[in-house]
Image (cartoon, rainbow, N blue to C red; front, side, top):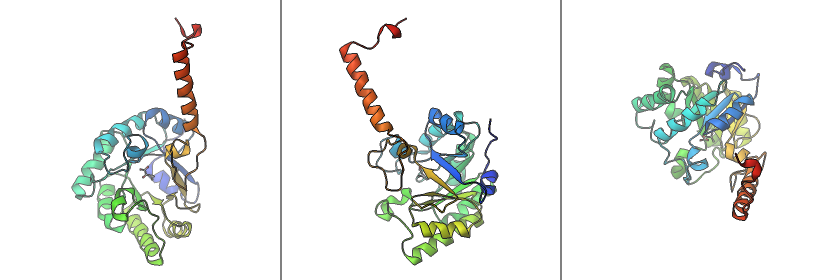
Length: 264
Ligand code: KIV
């Protein structure tokens, strides 16, 4: 069995090991990731789009995150499990953030939480970290701000925006994040951020220069109907499922399943 990954161990991996992270929403998938030796599993609020049929992450509730985080935790022995705090469960006050994040650790067994936002989020990050809750930061394209951004738009394209992202990363570093997700930004901006901070950066749609990468599991498996440009499908599970479902239907309708070998 691999040794358990902890937030300090992830932080110390910078410059020594590139970090592979995937999202998971259930125990069976998380177990496969854990067996493959993945150090980081994110129970992302992408749950809303990947599994619950929502158009974006905004409707996802803390109860749903707790339910799916607990399932993932049950499938894992060594990976660090991070629970995403959903929209409006940490923005209202530091107290609200502490309560929501605390429930992820206390009730669902998460090892850490992730919250979206830059320098303005530093006081919340600091309060969580000071109270023993490891925090994964998240800057760049912020899916919970999809309405404010006017869509899922790449960030940091102008020199001014890029400079702001670097300042955001430094503010979150000072507040104590153990690692930082960089989503949807030019590769050279992610490279500058990665060079500027002491904790690992984990990229998604942020090019090859980050300390690690994260993908949504549905994209990796080829389950997403219209995958984003940055994603890579390593297998075509969508087609495999379509074929299996159609073959099963044909068998049942034709009376060839169950056969004698499936009977007691
Ligand atoms: O919710 C999620 O899956 C995420 C990753 C894409 C980083 O935030």
